[in-house]
Image (cartoon, rainbow, N blue to C red; front, side):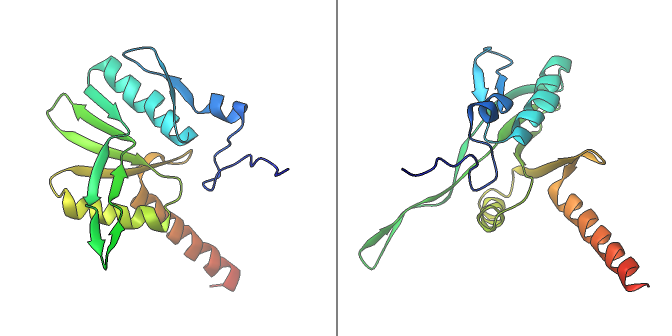
Length: 161
């Protein structure tokens, strides 16, 4: 009998305890929401719910599908469509709209889909956010810059420069 995996390929705990850690309650309906990651739940609880409470956010939707490439035929074979599923679609009181994705680490798939999203939907403000204790919520590419700089500094210290 195969042993059941406790974590998925992204390191998310799939046990009942892991699911509890990823569950929050919809601000509007009160229904439970099982998020894909603890980071998504954290963003929902800290940013979305607080934004709804203080009136800076007027509306939100979770897990919206955006088509990046339609299905097509290639040499008689059907190639499946490619979709991007957002973590959060958020409308703000100032009239702006953002598609937000929370990222701990970006996979190769995610990087390609982000490029395709920006190409197909150039008028939509698309943001990847990460969270660290040191920075709080920060754009993913900014966090990557900080991490690269710290790595350079660490190497320079190690090399005695």
